[in-house]
Image 1 (cartoon, one colour):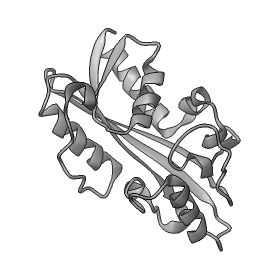
Image 2 (tube, rainbow, N blue to C red):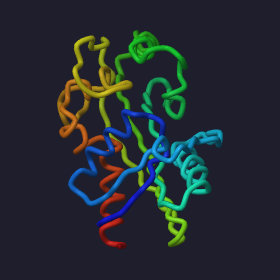
Image 3 (tube, rainbow, N blue to C red):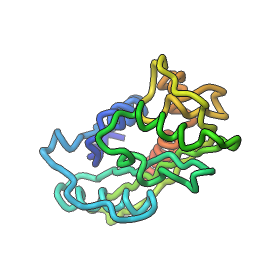
Length: 198
């Protein structure tokens, strides 16, 4: 495919995850750090697609490469979709262990543990006047306890039990998670699009 794309994120975990998924393709993924860029636009939308588009457009205006940006989060049914678009900013400055335990505490009386991870991936190629959005989702339950020993994943992965994998993301190998995760599904849609629109 021989393509260079800028990933508009400062989240090192996301960069690592996307790079792993692109490893078999001839795509060079540049980070904001590689180009000395930062996202200065404010995420003001109440949905993942809108916030991903804000980030993608911001970086696309500052470079000449195609740009990829995503916005993702965990949506819990009994909490009316919370933390949703606020997943990263919920209890900002606190550890994800604290965030996970806070969510478990908010659900302590709830039998319904259903939750979904969502990812909106926006691809902008200014030269070819392309702007596409790809949406990924995966469903599961929130566990009753935080898994202190979870060896993999990041964020809320230690408390997200995947229906597909029959275990938490925190206990799933990266290659297992990538096959069925919200980000993996959105990225696969993007790759299918790039392959058929070279």
